[in-house]
Image (tube, rainbow, N blue to C red; front, side, top):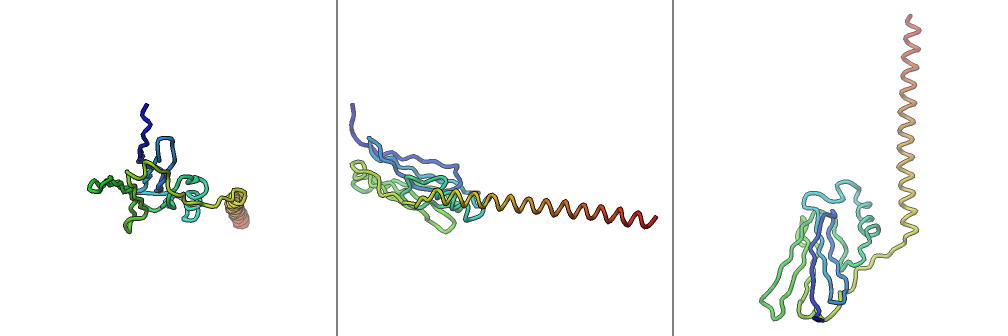
Length: 168
């Protein structure tokens, strides 16, 4: 049985944001570069703050090496063969250039573990309360809007009937 540790890099996407992750396995670190959103991202369908909140807290970037990037992006993977040990450069590029960057030294990483994670403080109960309050507020606004529309429509009908009966 071969017990040599190896480096594995997964390239993925279709999540409407970008991130760099790493997870330790018995065979060595497992890296993932996820890039998605050359034409659209979560900012297209939800407001900025909710998009950032979703990415940081709901999707729980547990293995993130750096903070996720939510704007339009694409990923690149480059191999530098000219060094004694090949190096792999994982990058996510946005509108203004490189947004996320990580260098993997293939020779040294195979004998080590993942780099420290980018930690996000989780306060689940407060997050759930905030989502509940926001949802209730939206429902209230929809209810008030519907009530005003129905009340206004009823008044218009009463006015039309009143003016029609007085004309005759």
